[in-house]
Length: 578
Image 1 (cartoon, one colour):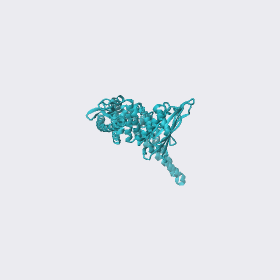
Image 2: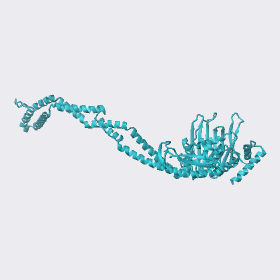
Image 3: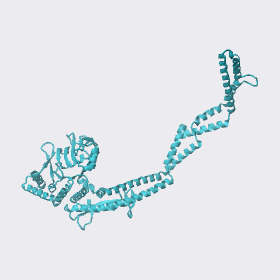
Image 4: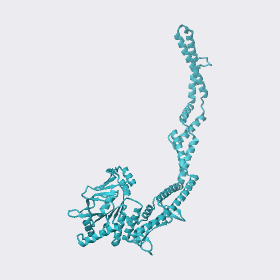
């Protein structure tokens, strides 16, 4: 319940505090006094669009104090998430707008995003004005209203349909993408395959580059290498043709010379041993050089093969990467990309099968959704028509018509029931509220068949019906009684009083017949004594209340006859409420 509302520097209201009670609170005042600023303040408090503070004021401020019931679990949880402390059951909300248009919000005394106020507002309060009446004339709003009335099971069915519809859309998009881009994807796949085939044909191996370079250098200098190796081999082994000895003979002779007298000095024995080792190393080197000479060949064919191999590798570097590791990485990435570019008939066929299954599933859910809507429409029509009887429209009937949407008018066509309907994420149905003013007349759309007063009463009847199934605990009505007078106004007052038995109801009204039913009556009055017109809010009761009703009745608050008429109206309203 909203216990208190404070408004500062909003419109013509400089500073006003509205003490609020359970039940029905009516807000009245002269034209231009700022009654609608109360509704505007509530809209601002709960995340509505903010305009700048009026000239001469640093900021506009709206504060609200709520008593949050234990049963309002969702509201309590969201407020606690925002940082509010609800141990005492009170929730403080505030919103300010500076003269530059900057907005700030607070929840439970802590700064919070404005969006949090809007979320809390959806759970705590419902504001209805003439703009809401115009919105309800739109087919999409009428369908949403019927879906809300249909209940939780219907809501689950609608969620299931939307999930299937979105899954169908994703599948259709993927299938369309494959079909429309198949040529580009096939071209890319062919290029990747050509590259992979070229790399596979060359079959580059890690470390191959350096090995080829070494072998090519050896073959290119084969004669010089042969001469060097042969000269070194001859120097070690000597020349058999001339009998000239080599290094092995010289080292051997030196070792033998030392061994002859080694028994006389141990150091000579050590030298002899070292020379023997050197001789062995020279003999081993001679064998290796001989083997090297046997293997060394100036093979032009092999050198040409190496050149061709190096040229093939350079071609890969020029096309795919700067070096061999880069070429191998390109081949790995190309293989993965080919897997993504699966444009095979099998993939298309798989998606087509999935699309058919999802289409059938969405159509089945759309069929169930239509049946659920029609059942809810019958209940909704009966409930609203019953409420209209108590609003001085005893013969009127509201019909919620649920019809198939024509094929081609949705994002996809589905076979619903026995025909094809255009489907969107909300189903394959068109919902329209029709009004039959009296028996024998043809139902007509609300915007065509209802006068301003009738539309106000239809809106109120719908709100009463919604209140029966739950909704926010606070209901605010801004001149929903426009275009109504006489006995119909009394019935509207009685209806609002009935609604206030289960909800806290705030009504901005210009009708004394409605204000007479209030449990608390607030008057917005303006003061023009200064250079600037400002307004304030006061609570009226007893004689002051009768004078306000007299002003509303005849514009003469001091008329004894007017006051007597007002007192009679108050007494009659009290009887009707009891």
